[in-house]
Length: 234
Image (cartoon, rainbow, N blue to C red):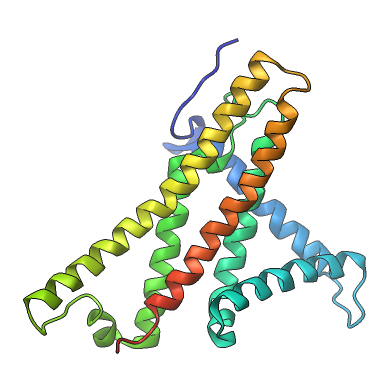
């Protein structure tokens, strides 16, 4: 058996000239799984929640408290929470798929988080969303003042660096998530291929931990970027 390694997902089938990759299909599956789970758990919301509703409410409350403690401003937490919580849960589920036995060995099974297209798409969407929110909150003129500074040559250069920093932030978000999960998938694939029993178990545990940390890091950075980008210039 050959081990196939690629930086991006591979076409699984095509419709009207649009290629659907293996990672894209799994990402859709994860999204539908999350949506279905929350809809099922919250289908009958009650003042005294049942076990399922209580569990999902606990998940959301824990994530909210985590970001609220990080930001220290409840209003801003409420603003960014839908984006940050969705990213955390979605990325975590996609990361945990990596530990499924056989993933990465067969063409039709691959973690979406190990596809650079997937991670960069999440990063670009998140940063665009943040900047749109910043324009809405600050207004177009005040928003542009963050990057176009006419107080002098030095301040103008600082503004240019700020603008370049937004691009590098976006790239680093996507590449960081991709690099960690891609490396983990290769490690699990090689170990499972060479020694398929018992030995891979510690590595599976490590990848679960890494998957959780990377989901937390990504959503936390998005939260911090939202707070700094939507803050008024002084």
